[in-house]
Length: 123
Image (tube, rainbow, N blue to C red; front, side):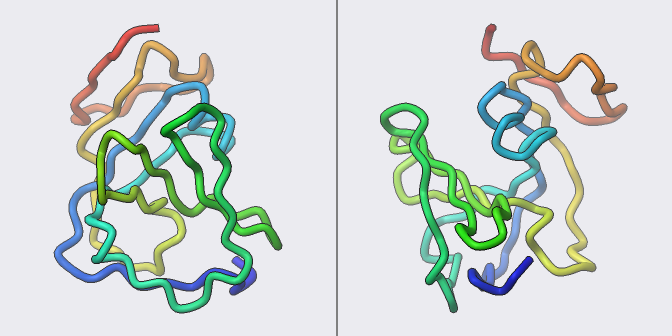
């Protein structure tokens, strides 16, 4: 939002996955809508204000320390993959949401989207 972190995601870009786990809801204020990308596909141009927060070992959320924008998510067990927050991409993206995960933890205000596959990993 402020330009402290700028990046490009090289194609091909996959579909959007929505994560409704309580950590992603706290990080974004709703749910994490993100695309999973091999790390080399994400080209950071400016990252002076990029910070990573690790709420538990092996999980990190990337954000801009200047404006607070939610930008990335990564997990050690996924190796060289980073999730890029879909809302941080310039439009038109041509993306569509195809999967919603951790639905057992979705916000009580959220209405599941028709046509989006849902997966639960527990409570």
